[in-house]
Length: 254
Image 1 (tube, rainbow, N blue to C red):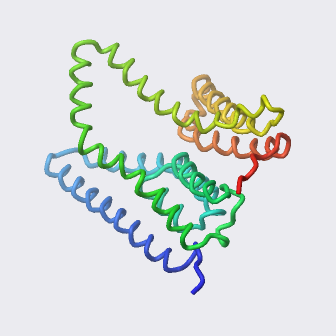
Image 2 (cartoon, rainbow, N blue to C red):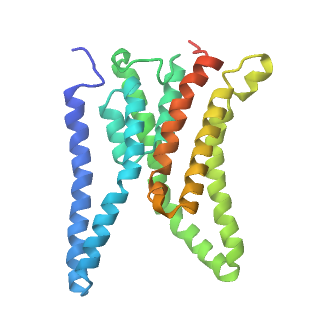
């Protein structure tokens, strides 16, 4: 039997997993509604909060859809659908999948999902899923101690606590910067493809900044704050096309 990354069996298996997660969400939503009634909370405010929350999920959903489309060319639809629906993010999933593909001499966008073998698909699947589960295990082991330490620090010096938390956030972002600048050194050898991810990042950052300034200056476009991320992603993808054609794409090492 010939393997296919878009096999109906995969859609069924992954669909069952996603339905289980959705089932948990519905279960806790119902429990929360019942509990709110027991506590005598204003049900009109509860419904208003639910509606506004549902509307605000549209913006991040657009970002997820973009990631799904971007990954589906090389990985098919079921795997990105699962990874971006449960626990995952476009930045992590792309890096994880690309690392596996680079080991076999390919890259995201250069290999079509129909060319994937079963062994390659399973390897990519395990790298994308097992690795990110480390975060779940660490929450159970160290999160309580870390949170307790931060609370103690906040009681002593709130400004230092804010600085510490911001530093951790910047450290997390810096980890992804390494992926952006990893090929930057090639420009010193006369090759220009290393500039592509840097310029794409700058274009996306400028778009995000312009959205922020527009929201700050014009109250009528306050809705733009919720869509700044997907807009920045779309602009980055659009800009990446002419930049890659102009500056070149990184060579694929077989």
